[in-house]
Length: 355
Image (cartoon, rainbow, N blue to C red; front, side, top):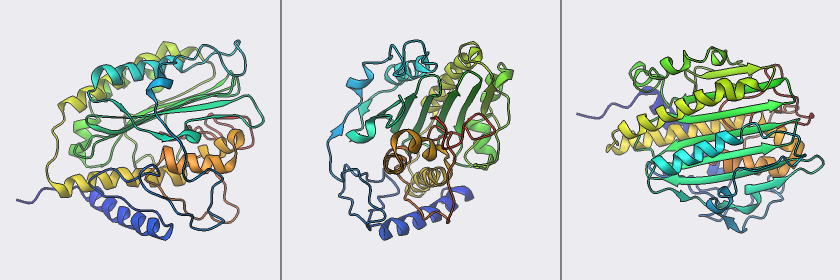
């Protein structure tokens, strides 16, 4: 009997084919569906045109993450010791769980220029770390520190496509003293009821403990029914106190449940199902790259060319740039995955000191 492939994954396979065609137009190899799509460290990336060229070198030193991660937690903000690093405990805990609960954790080298940048005009720094592990083809994390104006922690976990697990999406943002936005979710690759019951329903009991994280996400940038679950933990606060009081324990529990679900998962053997899962992950990258408001934010602090490269070569490495409609801009708010910190729900406009 042929293996069942959810319709949403079949659709994702078709979208992946479209991405492959766009890759060809951009002179970029599309990669294989059953495995990880090649990045610039694996293939030469020709320049499609002068307009599409980035100022970043096409061949440059690659860096690992373990040595830099060993320097965590940061002790003081780049803007001054009076500004707290609100989400530093979260990244330290997450990396500890990753190393303690997963096997085969290894650096996933990436371009040095994308690993660390400092603000062009304002005190700010952005540093990223990239790993793989048995069962996970990519676990990326980014922290943005701009003192009081912005503190951001973002991470996405991409399972090996032999597992149909949701992606783990984390996006915690604070802008000033009174604008805190927190998003935490198992981002589903399918909306099939059986899939959601298997992976999403167990979160309900955890989420119920934290009423401050029961908010509803705006649909301004994202369709909440696509790559988001009904157990999305979403909080908006006008002070930093709930970060430790409510968000941190919820984060610990969500992460523990994600590890439990991974360890209970059975790897798929059907190549068609594996390919469809890999295609759905690639579709997530393309969908997110086209909608994530963080590009405007990155541009504000680190320059537009670097922001574009960071978005497509690190945050959403399976995405390819698409032509923007004339006059269209992305807002400044989200941290690169998860959900946006958009104007009106916690994030500042692209021209504000934001991250």
